[in-house]
Image (cartoon, rainbow over all chains, first blue to last red; front, side, top):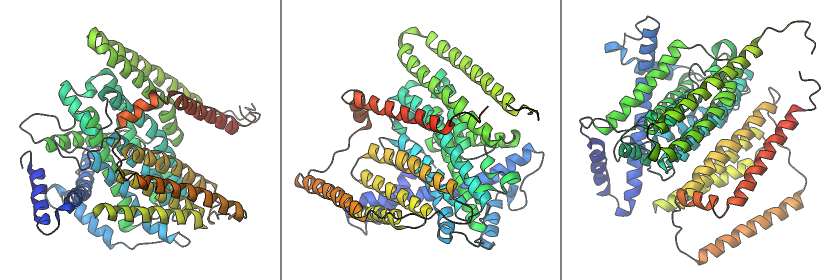
Length: 388
Length: 165
């Protein structure tokens, strides 16, 4: 399993196929092979992640987690899959039957699509687009309408509400997410994800170690957690209020599809965060580059699980306030700091690190105080005789 | 050959989405048809090497505007009954508009077919430079327009302010 294992595997398979087909099909065959790899990678990762999450959350809660099927319960996802497949597919009366079938199938498309643009390793990217970062943002933005359709199709008020909440949240967090990506684009001077990783290799440090990068990374990561609707941002699927949000009325494999979209989407976002801020596939020479990226992405996914094991759920208004009143102004400030850092770092040495970092930290604290004050004021118990 | 197949599939998506968007009585399905059509157009852009245009098409039209439409439809519905599309009665006006627009599109295609050079990929860097040099004034004017639309929307949403505290 060396550095070029997957690349040589792909070229060998392509050679076999080209023995049968005319040479003009070569790009098509290449595309099909790469898509197959991505389509296989995403569900396999999802199976592993569900096991990992249950195991880790179990540990956080002083339990063992799944430990019956296979060693350490590693085959639990397979058992779950079989169980899911056996369940009855219930379509509620009065539902839009076509959309009830289509929405769970389509909702995984944006999540799978995101894997196409991420460089898995050196020279290992399915579509090395000149504007890859824009395509990543576009793919992550596509899931919001599909989730609303998923919530709308069964014609259940709770699931419509869940879908609308999910969409409002995803739209709100897409903006600071895009702006923190813009900071990376400004520093690199390119919209290509491979170029971002190579720029970090050339500079010799990860972007997360720069003052603007540290803040942009935190904003980006929080936004990806919110986009994936994971705890503490999982109000759209809050069981205690909305039954289960937009996927209330889906059973069996349809429900599993929503789950798969969530897991693969969050893992793709982890791989993007690792590529943009943590140096992507750059790492020690003795490890293959594709393994390095997976290790970094798994570390980020562990942080997501850690959040889930630690932090309670936010309320919807708190979620939206966090996005619009804190992360959005902060990401604009990060853009200013990135510009300052870019033009100052050449001649002012350490001052170019300290000043942006100091001012961003101050802004972070200032905004936190404002937001906390907002929350306290909004949550103050109202007096009955308050007539104004 | 693969390019022709991709073109055929994407055109089918675009046209089918357009037919659903215009023809469906169910507003929600019509909105999703519009989204399908927009994504198909993005694919066609990608096929013509216009990467930036394709990304922006998905990001803004399919990801932004379609979400707003879908959101509004889901929000405005009464529970239990789907929002019905209202078909207008201005058939002559609609026919005229359709004829003029398709005439313009056909004329554009015929003109482009004369110069049969394949389109070259335009790097995003070049587009950015054009926006911030040659087209700076219209670019800024557009952002001013959007800002005023935003402020106007806020004013409308706030109402007269009498029943607010």
